[in-house]
Length: 205
Length: 226
Image 1 (cartoon, rainbow over the protein chains, first blue to last red):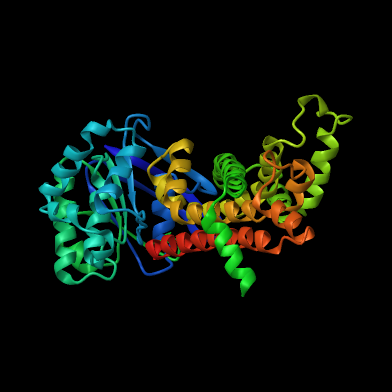
Image 2 (tube, one colour):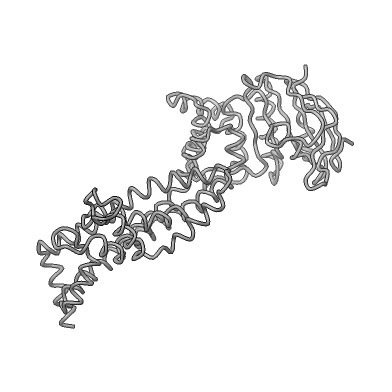
């Protein structure tokens, strides 16, 4: 069963094609990794799939109930609020209209699942780059999205952190979520069992 | 030197009329700043996240109004609220209320323009993240206001400083009436013209003292921000 179906989809900015006539499907409950060199149009494609950008031509079918499906997007360079770790996580639940009484238990259950509950008492400014990436992932999966869009999860991370992120992604995927990742990290792609879409200069290669 | 000592003596004496002038100054300016801040920050947060035709023109107008001459504001309000003016029936001329209105008009463009810049910057930074959460407009506004809280506090203090140091408009619409509309700045003008330099100086020192407290507050907030 597919969740996305793309047919001759293109996206251009000022007459320059960023994505050119691509056609493929993305399956449900599968980890899909979009690979390719820098400037291949991977992030643009991920943003189009999420709905942040609209394709210039071609068709994009979302084969799921948009009203019921929860989507989450984790950015390559995640921006955090000028607040504590806990308040950053609270903010997601605030925006998602989750009852305030449930915030603490939701956050603790996700953090404990990945042995990250120590973070809750830390100041955001004291977190390392790797910990911030982990926090971005926790923030992304806090609401248990049906589809997780993840842009370059392992940018500038050492091998240990890449493995940690990969394990977290896989564990989360086992709960039944579909995950679409943009990455050119071979370590990550070797660890995760996945479907692959390879792009080059805006087209499938 | 004797003049300075005498003015310090006046301050320490804290006689009733001196206290009244200082308290009225604070009452008028603080109230004008609170009303202006609530309206300006809400309006700026709306303008920061919405795209509508004329947005750039409105921004340009508010930016230009930042340098609105207070005496012109005073003059226009005088014409409107004088007995033959369109709002003459309100009987507000020469009252603290009209002074609050005058200061509100003077500081609102300042608070709106500076808040808009700060909220715009914050929104541009968080735009994608908030979009990814599918956050409602109301929640986006609340988020960017909260995230800009230190900047906004500094802007509000700037507005209050501007209101406290204003003299041109309040002297025209307030009339500098003893025990009714006399504030620190108008009192300084009067006492100087009467040759009561020590009294004028004591009010000036009090005004500077308040300004120093404001600046210390700004430094404290900036340090917290960094």
